[in-house]
Length: 276
Image 1 (cartoon, one colour):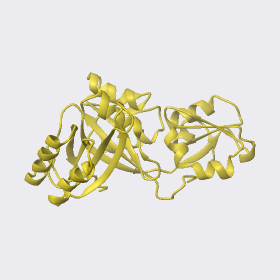
Image 2: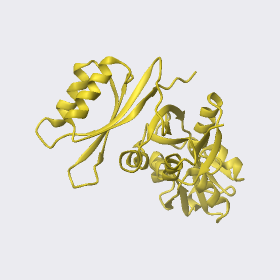
Image 3: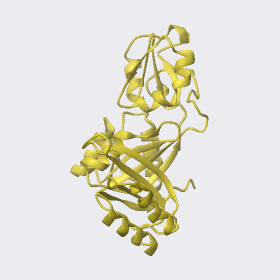
C-alpha cells in the first residue's frame, strides 16, 4: 500500500483532509512535523505521496508550500481537496477570555482569527507552532492560562475544553489541499492544471503572458505571486486553470508560455475537486 505523508500530530486539519483522501484512495498515513517535512518525505522516497495545504479562503496562499514547490523539489500535483475549516479556542479548563495570557497556533490559523484575537484576546501574547494540533498539545502540557486555536477534535484528543467555537473571521472558511507525487497523473473528466512562471522584465510582460490563456479561452482559477528569491522586484507567478495538458488548446498554451517565460515549471494536471 502506498504511503501518504501529512502534517501532524493527531488532530490537524491536514490529517482530516488526509483521512478524506484515504477514504477515496486507501493509503498508509505517515505523520510529519512540518509542511517542508511532508514535501521532503515525498522527494526522498520515504512516502509515495504527500498532502499539504496550498491556499485558504481568508488568508490566501500557504507560502511554505509554494516556495518548496518552486525552489526545492520537482514534484507533481496529482489531486486536490477542499476542506471547510472551523477554528476553536481551547484551554486546559474553563477560564475567562480576559485571563488568557498566551495563545498558540499555526500562523495560518492565527491569521484566520485576527478579528477574534483583537476583540477578545488583546491582552494575550500569540505564539506560532508547526500545526494547530501541536498548539493543542503545548497547551495541554502547559499552564492553565494558555489557550490554543485548533479544530474541535484537537480538544478531544488532548483533553482540552473548548472556550469558543467558529472564531474564524469569515464563516465560510475553507482550505484547499493538494496531493504531491514524483509521478504525474493523466486525469480524465473535469481537470485542473497548475504551473509556475516568471515574465521577462519588459513593458506588458505579465499582460502578454496572461493573454496567451485568454486567446485560447482558458479559465484561470487562481494566480499568486511570490518573490523569486533572486533580487528585489523579481516574482514568480503561480497559476491554476481549468483543463488538462492532454487537451490540444492547453498543450499549445503551455508550449507558447514556456518559450516566452524567463522561468517555467509544470506542476501537473489532475482531477478538479468534487465534493461527492
